[in-house]
Image (cartoon, rainbow, N blue to C red; front, top):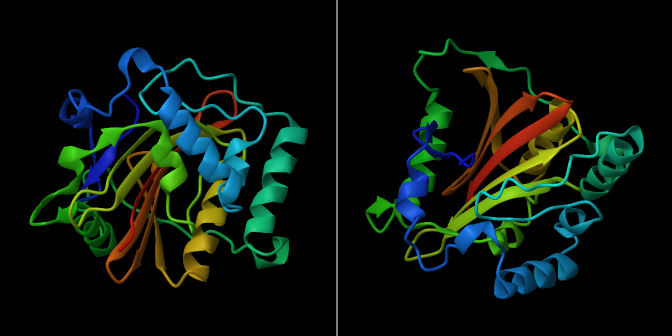
Amino acid sequence: MKLRLIAYAAPIALLAACGSNDSDSEADGDMNAASEAALNDNLATDPDLAGSNEAGAALSGTGNQNVPEIDTSTRAIEAARARASELVGGSANMDAVPSPRRLADDAPDTPAMVQAARIMQSGNGGNCFEAVSYSSAWAAKLPSEFPVYPRGNTLEAAGNDQGACSVRAITFRTGVPKSDVLAFYATRADDAGYTVEHVMKGGESVLSSIKGNSAMVIYARELPGNVTEIDLVTSKR
């Protein structure tokens, strides 16, 4: 299980147990036809999500690790970067990633990290992550401001729209360097009126963005083979 939601900006490894008996979970790691149709329909109609459906993208939504090898060729990286630039209105509009605030592994989370986690958890007085369902279709239901990075390979997707909850959690991989991916999301957040904080903690980059009762958090890490892995978690109200 690689998808890790946040509880006050800390990974929740037990999420798999919470969602393992959900009726929307897909047995044996296979994507069912309904999920595939819903995902492809949304990707076809939303230009902000179109980059997630380009050649080579993989979708499982259930922890299936049978994902095609990430294309780290110069051609693939430049194509993904070009699409990301289009989504922010051109390369001149791409912001630099804010300089990270470096925290010790055991340091308290920042107020922004805590606030973002509280926004995501709250719903009808409970924890929105307790009733998530797993389906690749959730990747197509991300807020339009925060799509999967162009040509990113989605490993897992989960979400919950029950009651006041509106959470999405996606894990994807890309051959694009981490700094470029973070710059894309920082720019999208800033353009949408979110405040943005960048922290380094526990060997990961954590990008926290808040706007009123909406939040977006990214955990980003570098994997062997020049691959970037992203946990993207959102809640928009």
